[in-house]
Length: 301
Image (tube, rainbow, N blue to C red; front, top):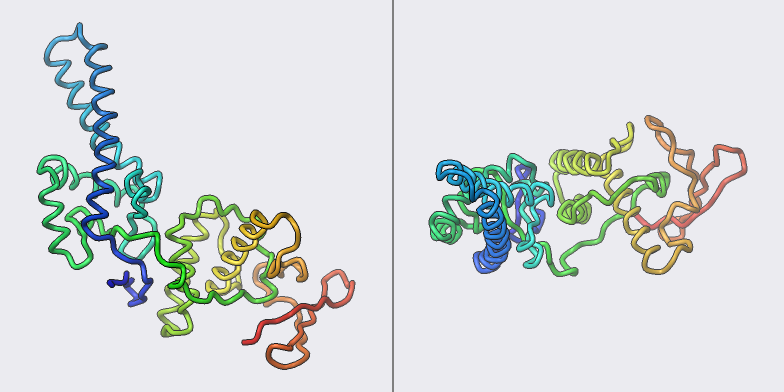
């Protein structure tokens, strides 16, 4: 099985999609696009019946470019690489480093797709995908993208370490609705394997993922918070919200209710006093309001 390896030599364990699943996804997408193209063409042909031949030809060319070329580009850009066919087959288009694609990536893929898929009935795309070690067609090569499988076995996702106690609950106000599943998977893969990485490589990877996550949530990484800690805290916040949706609105283990809200940006965190050793350790955090310390369980290191 091939893994997705970033420029920093970090294996994210995202599985590249192979030709059969990609072909099925393209077939579904083409079916939808062709149906839309025929419907729009018939409507425009009726509306422009009174025009001359040159005008009808111009309308036909514009319809071809807007529907068959511009449509897939717009869908991939807005869905961050997850068209209708890819969603049905559990696939997604990502950058070579595992991040979400942008308009320029979708534009290059769409432009090459006209030749690879539409004009040659998919022959060029199939040959390129069979030759490529990761099943990429020419559009993927020039755009710097890769089609990966989103549906991976749950057992492959390693243990995600919890964030520092003083960060728990600090990001409860973040809007996580715009974060794509592909980015969540990349963050979880990194957190599960960050202790196995070279410190310099791991820090660079954490900064990149934290930047992508901050861009999707609309909130910058707080000053003084390490990127890895920020990623762990946001992942924990997502888990807390999912647990609340599943089990109701009561307290959830790991939620920051037992901890004071984290310090302001730039500070090193609240004063912490530890009592005990290992799994029996208890932490005492001094509350800013002077109400006395609050204690909570600290997982063993």
